[in-house]
Length: 496
Image (cartoon, rainbow, N blue to C red; front, side, top):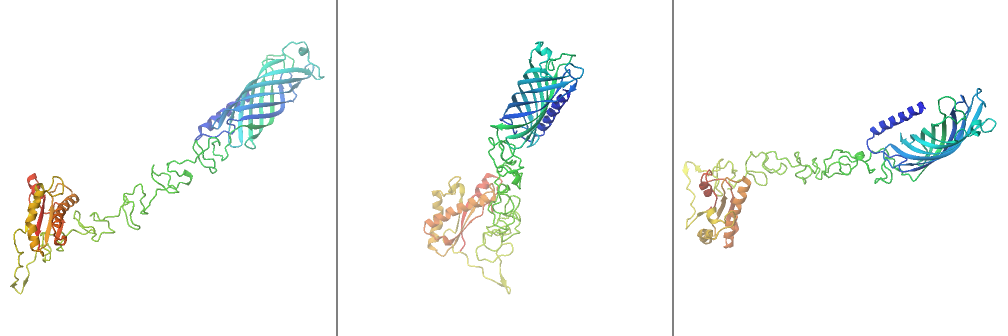
């Protein structure tokens, strides 16, 4: 008896270790199944007869295991059967007994899936026993004949066994156990203080009915498995689907980039997409349509070594000094087209065609110490330049002219019409309150508003040079509002 109890305790301990080492829910082979078992084998009586005389018994049982998705499961068992126990003792009269018995019982069974084949179990329960002791001559024994005791009782059953799964629903069983009597009359004798009991060892087969199966062997029964064809050996979640730790839609076992940030689009290998092939994944790429072969920075944008806003692969002037305004080709602006960029030009409004020095200022030519006559000044017939103050001649906060500006512009319009060969420069300026880019943009818009007025009055666009110089060339200080108002202006100047 002590051996059986030790075995039960060992099995329970092993089951706890197995459960603690699980990395998720595991499918149990008997989950939700009804199991029909037929088994039998030898019996060994432990009674007042000291000699051992093996006999046999057989039984049938029906078990139901509650649904469980762990390595262990619990079920209930009902069973019935019959057989014999026997004993011998030369000191007894008669020296041999054999007791016929029948029984019905029930109890709880605890099963543990060690692996896909071996399932040990323990059973504890009780049974109602009918017994009838005989002697070696086939005659009922004395106390039996005299009705000294009742020939029925409630016994206690303990069993330890192993099921070996042959198929999904068929198993071979080996088990051993003990049945304890609360009385001392299984051998018809009541000698000493110990009650009778007997051991048994059984071999049998079990057939599972209505159980759930796990076709792909991933540990999740088919009824719960929404990914039923998972390859063998793949770790799955509770729904039977391969784990996808980074949630990118590509399961871990084929994911070549397992730590993709959440939400990043990936290819079929689970790696972040890089649509333009610049080596920076789309989810980080601030410039997603970079041409092939162009070197980029960590944000996926083409390199701009001189920081002028024009990427190196388009920059025709790659070493522009920091802070210098450039055109679309990355070259420093030259507003008066004198060949000297604005940032070096000390005379920014040079008339086209005039030769200038390295500072952008006109050169006085001397040849053989003979003074070259000065160029004939522009014929002045009326106005040759006007300045439109933004606060006075433009709508507040906009680039649209006020009607008051027309009066001033018409002073030049007459000259333009009378002298059709004359050319003019329209330049817009701002104060220093905005960025370079914003200043150039708004100053050019105001200059174009003036140009459009002249065009609307019949003057050809080809006669004008229109520039937005932003905060360049202030005519007053920008340290107070009065000076800034003077700097916000549009100048119309005759250049030919």
